[in-house]
Image 1 (cartoon, one colour):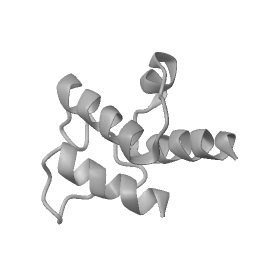
Image 2 (image 1 turned 180 degrees about the horizontal axis):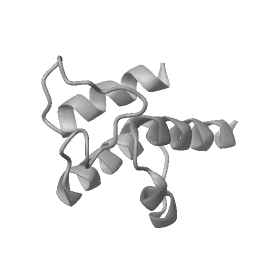
Image 3 (image 1 turned 135 degrees about the vertical axis):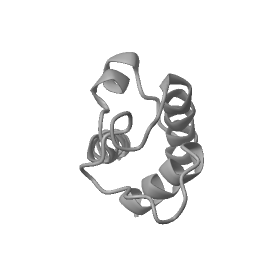
Image 4 (image 1 turned 60 degrees about the horizontal axis):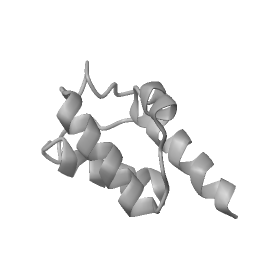
Length: 80
């Protein structure tokens, strides 16, 4: 569920079409063309969608779609 929701958010926030290759290894900047404003919007959307708070250090570590999934899953699991 988390990976699918993140894929939807990436498509929306980065304004990509459905055919975009939003795969785990896709890098936000290099592969998906995200700039710093789009990444900020994506992080905000992730925080809102999953009711988590991603700190600045974690944001810097999120380079790929898989990194985003891993970060969100860890934050959600920490609430249980």
